Picture 1: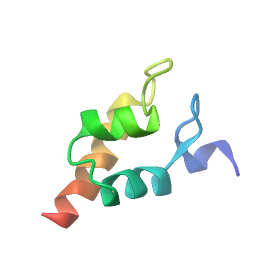
Picture 2: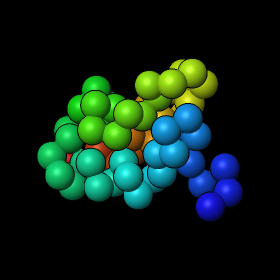
Picture 3: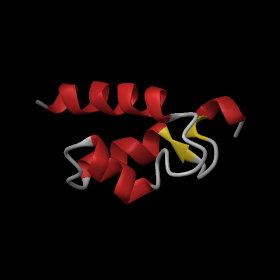
Length: 61
């Protein structure tokens, strides 16, 4: 998988990992972050990760 497939390259978190965390009950960025380690490394992906997580959460509301 290319590095562009990862939302968070430090912990190799993909869009599918975020979707799965939400399906399993994570209903906020903080909970998705805890479940996946998203944006827990260098922090470079935090803005992109928050934006994508919000987009996914908005789809289920």
